Length: 501
Image 1 (cartoon, rainbow, N blue to C red):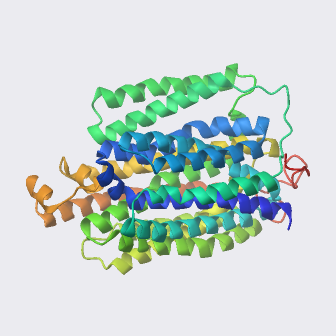
Image 2: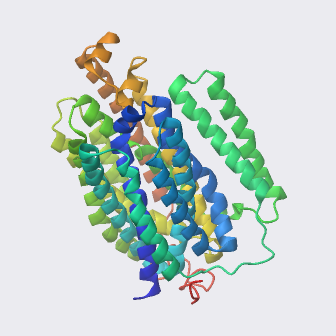
Image 3: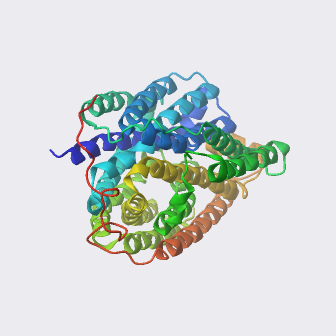
């Protein structure tokens, strides 16, 4: 078997582990909150701390991988993620779980900072869309498996097993990666790591995300919200100025953004991510909190999204290799906008199979969009910058995921009376608690659906904006490279042969 397929298999194992973990946690959200007696504040941070750590570290880790070796850092990511997963299963309270999820986030950042770089190293540009499409299949398989495995676990045993199922995958992936992966980076002794930039970026981003999270929970006028946001902005400005004028070896070469294909593909990804990543979180609250279905039934209603993604992703990847990213990615975004607009019409009497059908349409759009846009982003930079390009892409994507949860929760909870959101999302919602707030069940249903409509309509608008940016990338050549730039040794070809060390 060619090395490129072996490398893809290892990266796919990382995607499988990540997709299972992300799906089962959303499904298990109420059960975890109930068992640990965790507040809504704790549980929001259980979700967001993983994203915060990944977002803050992935850029620096991508640069470090370009300097010291992608294989080494990728394997370390498996080890750290697996250890973090094991510890999450032993958490005694919400604070414990937040800390162990942070460790998981460090491992996840090591993985995502290198995964796209490893695939881009192994595959020539004319085949990358296909490769990223196959990774999307794995992500879909993991998500579907996570739904049924997670739903089964929560039905018959403790939520702790939703973290422990990562352990065998992590052990196998680490062993296979050590055996198979080649190192494609030759360390340059003259390269230096830009510690001031890493500290400024990490501190600034964590501070701002903390302030935004506090805003969701406690309002947007308190000092606890505005203070961190106002403190974080100068740190990010300082990061930009240092990278532009002071750094000898920047972790984020700003020249990358001079390439229109890279910049526009990145902006497209950000807008799409902010719009859509909280969709399943909102639907799980709708299915369980408003429609009153079991966790296993609610989980199964998400399956059409991932099944259609698995079917369409390889097709979208192959078509992207042939025709370029503009048409495929833009078409995918328009399909997703249609799906989200349809979701904005659901109410308390909409047949559940209809909502599941809307999820299927959303997956069709995702299958067309993700392989094309990812390949366009990675194909627009030279090989020696794959690590930092992958890190940059995942930094902005993780930021978009965090902002997606923020936006969704703000729009949804703005329509709910004070005190309802912690009960609804924290797993402690009962008829008695509803009566204590002076509401009837029908009144709550109406308010929740109103907030859901607002969240989905704003999401549809953002997806349309992403489609406009995607279309503005212009025409791309086909048959040479993904972005219409003739192949050159600096950009194309498989990595040089080397033996695992």
